[in-house]
Amino acid sequence: MAFRQVKELLQWVCDFHESLAARYTHLASNQGDERMKMALDFLADRERRMGQNVVRFLEDDKTGVLDTWLLDSSDFVHPRVLDRVPQCVDCRDAQDILANAMAANQTLKDMYRMRRELAQTPSETELFTELMNNQDAEIRLQVRDIGRLEMY
Image (tube, rainbow, N blue to C red; front, side, top):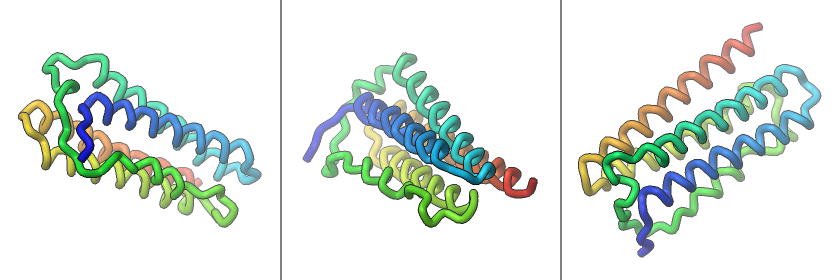
């Protein structure tokens, strides 16, 4: 079993968002279709913002929850999620890109839900509930805005 602290998990989440933003930026720079480029740039921006939001949790820990130790049999193998984002060889439209972004978003949401269920303290439960709710709101925002891009 691996013992990690909440702050290590949140740092991984920040790195995850930055890696995904870099991947979207790279894909956008190689994209010929303007709508696809706009969708990828939008997703890159959203990933950067989500990473910045998690940084705020790391900087503003008034309860000491970040020092909570997690008992976890997995070894944080979540970086494989980045492999779900294709090189867009077969991407036909923004909906293909959105489907891949939703896979990454859902994985984070599921991880937050699991951490909430395994929480050992009320402040840990509150933290992961808030992160899960934020991720859920982000999913709705991305679906709405990519949908708008497709309409015009």
